Image 1: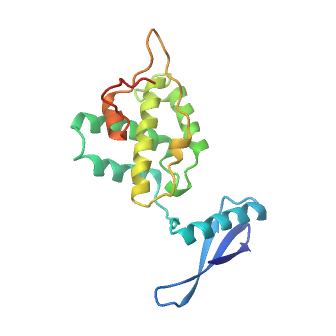
Image 2: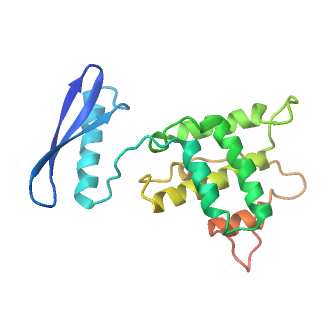
Image 3: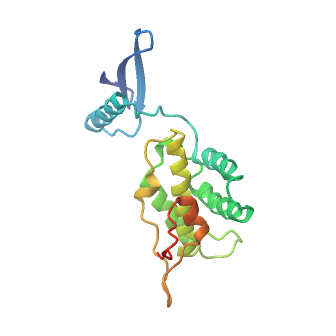
Length: 198
């Protein structure tokens, strides 16, 4: 598969030559809004061509983080206990507050890190001053990692960017910060023989 670049205004586009199931030639234009200059555009083009050749390319769409998280919450509602789902919903709402308007396929690790910092600084929903505890933000991170893992299974994204982010360290007062088992079971991280400590 071959492709080249085209600049329209201030936006670079990857122009990909493909063929449909009947063998008819088609030209696909894919915008590269994150490319700042021709060199970055060439890097994006090379990645897209490689992913198309291997069958791992996912067509960009306009689904936002909020739209996806609400769909995911509906999806897992019958798979977990009501109390667990309530915990997921609470953390998802905190994520939606800070990341909801971002297009899911364009979500970046640095945006997630900024959202965690914001929650630590001013994350309380009761209107009082102060932010969430490091433990609560750590739970937010677990929920986002699990949700984006499902997004990969649904082919909505090609990688789990939340897994690239280091959550805040929990305060250790006498004992390590413990993540509730219900979160770890849902993420596939629970081991019966060991008590998970973070």
